[in-house]
Image 1 (cartoon, helix red, strand yellow):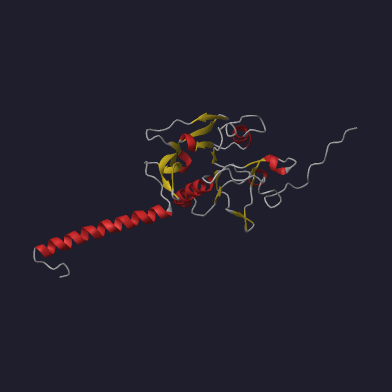
Image 2 (cartoon, helix red, strand yellow; image 1 turned 45 degrees about the vertical axis):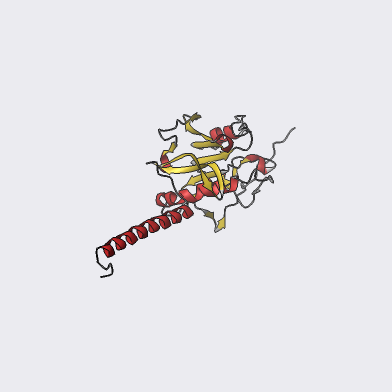
Length: 244
């Protein structure tokens, strides 16, 4: 008589599961793209979560079922955000995000396409990324970013199925729970000119990185100093010493 194998008495946590499937990052753009997304949206997330309870995963595994080997039961979005969970567990940095331990699904997951996009749109049950994000993990917003096409497709989970989210008048995709928009920005970041994936606020203002904010302040200070210098020259032309 065939016996049914016993289930483990305790489910593994993030310290007991592989943190990588051993594959390389697919191209040099993926890492700076993730940093750009994270750094620019962090001020928004700090406002939404003054207690600091949120987590961002960058090319990190989301374990959604038990398999052998374990990594077959995980998907690793290039970028994802989870609300209302601690950034660390038991004082340790997360090695992965374990759904049966956390319960809370990510609000948004983003994939950066390196091929033709078929892997990111694969809806094969229990195997394809699209199916896993839609039917198993049930992530409300799923974005597929194709840098070579300068485009992003954003899907919204409605009535259990992903529907393409229409762009607004600015060509952006509103992620309403965050109060932000997602879209393509053509520009230079980390010394590379590309159509980057970026955030805007709900009024259409680009969310800046710390470096961009510092540069903006520097330019503002230079303009103010220029105005002051011209005003001093005009006063001196009238015979008035500015310092007095």
